[in-house]
Image 1: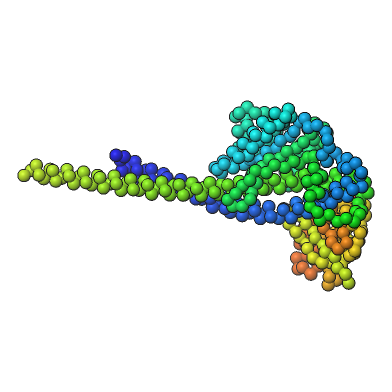
Image 2: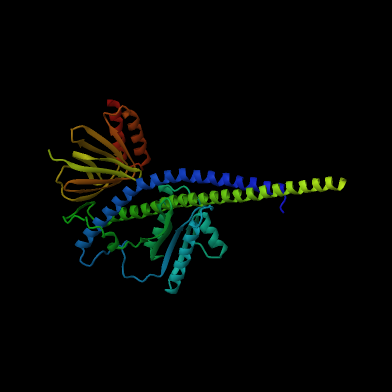
Length: 296
Length: 127
């Protein structure tokens, strides 16, 4: 039988843990609300940007008989080297959030390997970086602190290097993997092909106006280049915000589960404690009674 | 009088969404005015002021650093990086102008930025 003191110590330890997890849950809830607001604001901008880009690429496609020839759009070129960017959290204690991303990245690496494509990994977020370092997977660049406090400037700085490589022909494709926010209880892995842009994908929305489009400055490239750069930067930024929202929601869930488990554990330990106490009293009583009996 | 819809969107959210009579944009190749039924146009914007004439003929300015505008017959969508609205009916106009000046200053020293800065300081004097 466990002794009373031990059980008591265990109870207080578990309820301390419970206090911590509950506080962490509250913190995550507050942070999630803020990040969600941020995501909502930037979603408008992102959708307008996509709309604008799709219309312009549609217009250019229409005027060019042989389709889009710009360097930003998909060509039939064979893909040999891919830049794979993944976004994970800097901190743990958020359930399967990071593991899901890592798993998907590993799966992608396998897939591309079988196709004979070389992959360069770029990591954002301490947890993912640590994992791949530990498993001796080479990372081309690592970025810590970007996923926990994303700003547009930082995202821009990071992605511009990657885009430069792609435009200079060092890499052929940029893939971005992150765990995105759906609602309070669901996260989903999202994969975006940042470059080259697939015109089919962009032109999907059919609100495109059919009238001819004037462009200023006149040559297509200046405008398109500026717009595409913006589009990629903004997609990167949005992915970071989306990932942060998902991280907070995942942590909220994980901490909620931990708090519930701790509560259950305390209840079980209390039953054990009471049983032990009762047993001790009974033993004592028996001792007294038998002592009295022997005196007779 | 015919009206057109104008939306100004920044990464921080929508800052203007209303029907207007006329807008003047600081295009990369010169300032241009837009009335309803304008032909479709996409243009790069440079640092400057978007001047809006609202449905009730009040004038509103928005200082921007850079962006794009897409115009079709009855709608103009403007995507900008940073923007400060200068509403002359607002009591905090002086503060807003200061903010706008800071925004314009943060942009590289281009002719457009200098011109806008002087425009802003004359606006400040006039209140």
